[in-house]
Image 1 (spheres, rainbow, N blue to C red):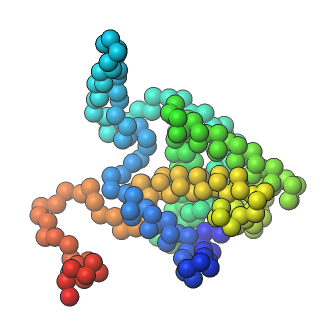
Image 2: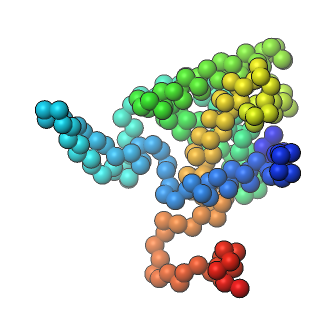
Image 3: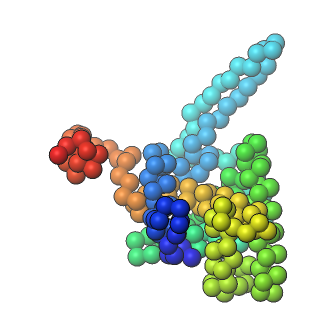
Length: 222
């Protein structure tokens, strides 16, 4: 599935999934995010009358700490690892998403005690239950025990919500969330950033500005 082309008849474009994810990652990755704890500031608050006083502190980027417990079970992580490797499999240039720990990033994300993450936990957990139910309905086995072709058949049916059948809409919303979190996890690791040619966050003796090739592409130079 990951190497199949997306075919959107509305604009007659063909785009490989990995290339599409790279485009999203290129726009999103400006600071590497190895875990939520790595970029979340620790904030303490105390009440003074009706006023809250916030005292943010700088996170320890060398020793990031996740201040909450992980919620997902091993069985759920195993299913997410299968999905992550369908979404971003290994290729000649980089390893697969699961081998880089995408499933653990998703666990850390949905375990966080914030409104968005709590909603995502319901979507991800409910989606995994649905996924296994759909696998058993179609093939008589849990999702992780299906052949790769059978797993991809289900994923192909939920990979794009606007075109998913009415009875598969929930599965498509779940798949979209897992795809987004998998891409975030993968493209904020060193191998993932290398995969899109990201060269930021490195010391430079000097900066000569963008290359002529980039300037021409932006139509800033003929």
